[in-house]
Image (cartoon, rainbow, N blue to C red; front, top):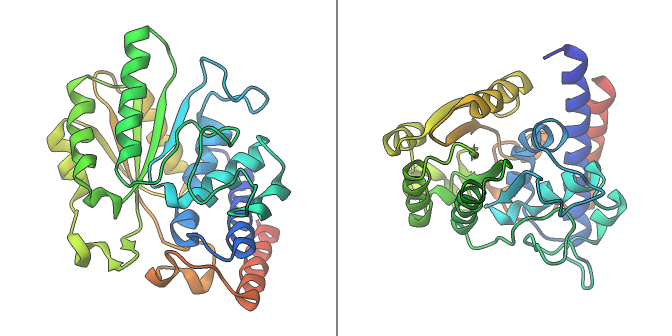
Amino acid sequence: MEQAKIQELRRIATDIRIGIIEAVYNAGSGHPGGSLSIADVMTYLYFVEMNIDPSNPKKEDRDRFVMSKGHTSPALYSVLAHRGYFPVEYLKTFRKTGSYLQGHPDMKGTPGVDMTTGSLGQGFSVACGMALASKLKGDTFRVYTVIGDGESQEGQIWEAAMFAPHYKLDNLTLVLDYNGLQIDGRTVDVMNPTPHDEKFLAFGWNVINIDAHDFNQIESAFAAARECKGRPTAIIAKSHKGYGVSYMLDQASWHGKAPNKEQYEQALAELKAYRASI
């Protein structure tokens, strides 16, 4: 990827991270850590990879996206806002009464949301159903889903992991946000789900390991997923929880809480300084 394009994507991803902080701070609650860790992948999906049209969110041939780890809705909402589905300023209404930006994604109320999620494990299964429906109807749209590594402890995840290769869903790409942390600490200590790559390989997936914050690797992975025929692709994206904000970085304590005013101002200052340096 050309350096100018990488710089553009980094600026967009930083804007998305700023939106995440704005949303969670103004709500006084939310999940910043896992939202920040997946922001680069989300940026690439919505600004490069997917066939979408913000002016027509329900167009029939659009690619579909399912945020299976629904608690990281701030990442989804921020990328949708910056892609033009609704005003960026609306992120400040996150979790407020009357807002369509609720704590978990709602397909009935929020422009650009393809599936309501929240109960961990279920979104991945729905993404499989969407991909199978596309095949059965002869449609050409692709389906993308993001799951968390803590979420991968759910049994339903592995039922879906068995289902997708069985039906040869090569129009399905799964991204596993592998930041190594969940609400109670390290995933390997709570209920060790590793090695993710070997498990997906055993089920028959095309598996690609990447650095979730390297746009060249992100680009190569999604290109390889498109080229793979006859089986779905799982991208194991090694990330850092809280990426972009120094005091949140790799801290499980920032899984599900909002910054106070001082922390909010520090986070914005760091992100804006980084953006200015790109």
